Every structure is written in structure tokens, then in C-alpha cells.
Length: 330
View 1 (spheres, rainbow, N blue to C red):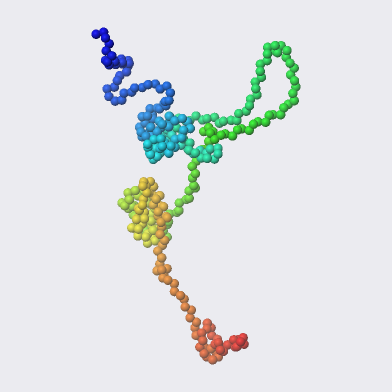
View 2: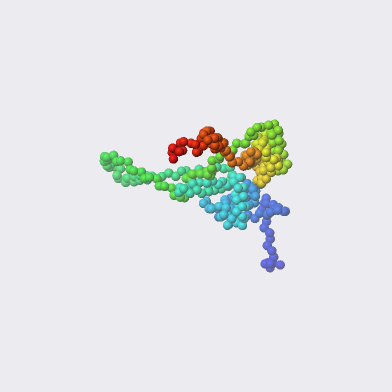
């Protein structure tokens, strides 16, 4: 009975006072990290609005050292997710304040994307002091020996010295602190004003009523083209111009409802653009479609005043044989 049994299982450790083991769910076994760890807040780990990929990507970014590259292609090489999924996760983090990306210009003129990661959204980043050129300070005088204090030496008179030239500040290297970067907005082209909406030459009540009914009926053929009363009133003159130029209502409806973008965010702006840019010219008249005829000039007949012979001329006179000026010139 006193021989110990080496094959018997060890006794379970006594529970820690105040520690209760749950009957179901996850059980944590935690050990304190001494090195190589990152502190992540529960506001990120248990975020209700972020996807699991975005939470994992934010955790990975916060664990990287400063200066690490976290471009979309670099992350796609590191993880099995596609570039599209990683780009969507980065946009989620930007929308919730965990990430901020901006374009900055370096000292050599190159433009790069600067990424700032926040472990606590809503907190302002500390502003780094602007580096200033360092000037050499004069060396502090050495303490005099004890016996020298009893016999003071006369102070020699020196001529005033010109101020020493200051060294020019050393240009900042390429790896300057973030405060040395200049934020550059993305290039934008000046917007051209939209073309004015066409107006009918002779507006009538019938044209206005037909154009308004055609615009209000567009939502039956394309639900995305549901217009308000104000939009219908604003676009009515343009459709009336189409009707004035003998455009069939079916032609107008087909032009305005074909090949709509998805999703359609601004239906009134799209209709205004199509009504203005696709406006057909007026139909030509019958006289414009008739080919021009060659004009025939008929010279009338005249009787010679001398021999009474008939000849063609624009005015009465003498025939060729009776003209004395021709004989004189010959």
C-alpha cells in the first residue's frame, strides 16, 4: 500500500479562488507574453460593423513595424485573399477611422501614398516637431584649480571679433519625418459647365403636356427613372424640343431608357445629358430634298435694223454682217 503508483494520473490542480470554469463556450488559457506581442483593443476585436477580414487586416497592420509596406499587392502576396477583397477591407478600415491614406510629395518630387494606422479611432496623431538645423554650442569653460582663485590674472583686452558665419542647414534626406512631407491633393481637371437644355422654338400647351406625360411614364419602362415633379417640370422643355422636331414618342422613350448604368444614382442628370447631347436636327422640308435644276438662259431674237435679219442678242441693234464697227476693226 505504501508503494507509489507511477502510472496513476496526477491530481487536478486546485481551482483558483474566484475562478469559475464555464460549462459551455470558449475556455481561455492565457500566458503572459514577455516579447513579440501587440495590444489590440476590444473595440477592434469585437467590432460590430467590420468584417472578419477587415479585423484581421487591422490586427496585422498594427503588428507591423513603422515603415513597413502595406500596399494591396504586397498584402495579396502575403495572404490568400484576393486584391479585391483586401482593397474592400482597407476601405472598411478607412470608413471606421482605423486607417487613413493620403498622397504626399517627397523632397525629390516623387508622390507616394502615406498610410497612417490608428489603434484607437478618433484620437489625433501627435505632431512631430519640425527639425531645425543644429548649431555648434561654445564649449563650457573648465573649472579653475583651487590655487588659481587666490591669484586672479588680469583680463586681457581683445578686439571685437566679427560674428562667426553660420553653417547652412543640412538638407533633409529622403527619409525625412512625416512632418516634412507636403500633402498633395489628387489631380483634378476643371469641370466644364453642362450644355443648356434645348428649348422649343414655338412652345405650345399640347407640346408641354405630351412631353410631361412622356417623362412621367418612363418609370413604367425603367423603374430607376422615377422622377419627381420638379425634375419633370425642368426636363419638359427639352422633350418638347424633340417632339417639335418630329421625333416619335417611342423613339424618345427608347433613347432615354436604353443602356442605363447600374446602379443609377442621378436619373434626372442622366436624362438631361441624353436629351441635350442626342438631340436630333430638324427634319428637312420637301424643297430641301429636291435636287437643284440647272438654270437655262434663253437669249431673245432681235431683227436687224438694216437688213431686217433675225439674230439673237440681249438688246435690239444690227446683226453681225451689218455692224460697221466689226468691218472697221477687220
